[in-house]
Length: 66
Image (spheres, rainbow, N blue to C red):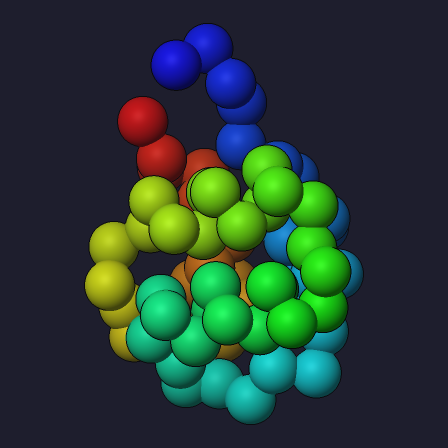
């Protein structure tokens, strides 16, 4: 899996308007509803289940993806 995770800024753009806190499933659903780039959806699907209190929590989790 040589694929790098999308940037936190790109993920934040796809999650704009999301009400936190939210579990991983909520992140994925919101991104899909906003026609997010497939790489963003895939990265969100690989995150721990959460919940995520804010966008900083999401960005931190994405940075630590294997």
